[in-house]
Each structure stands twice: as C-alpha cells, then as structure tokens.
Image 1 (cartoon, rainbow, N blue to C red):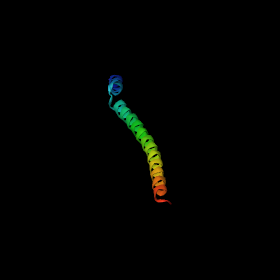
Image 2: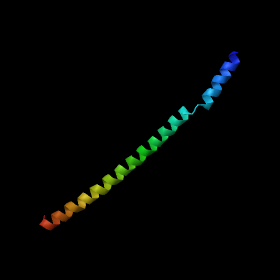
Image 3: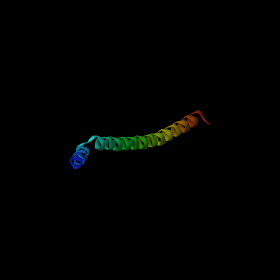
Image 4: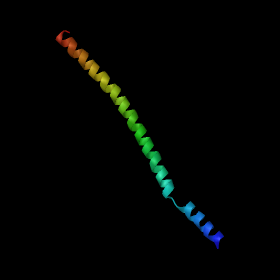
Length: 64
C-alpha cells in the first residue's frame, strides 16, 4: 500500500509540468532582460555621439 502511494506520488510529480513551465518562463525573462540591457547600452552610446556631434556643429556655426 505504501509502496503504491509513493510510486503514484513520484509518477504524478514527474508528469507535472508546472515546474518546467516556470523555469522556461524564467529563462525567457532573463534573455529578454539581457537583450533590453544590451539595447539600452547601444542606444545610449549612439545618442551620446549624436548629441556630441550636434553640439560641435552648433558651436562651429556660432563661432565658438
């Protein structure tokens, strides 16, 4: 009786996919956060360069 209950519990645990789904969502979330962080870093560098060039062009145009 006890052996059957333990075996049934183990089989139910293995068949359950809730844990696997949670892990998959956690991995996807980590990848999305990584891509967002890389994008922000890239855009920050591009924006900084653009503002620097604009500032230099304005300074050159007004004679500073």
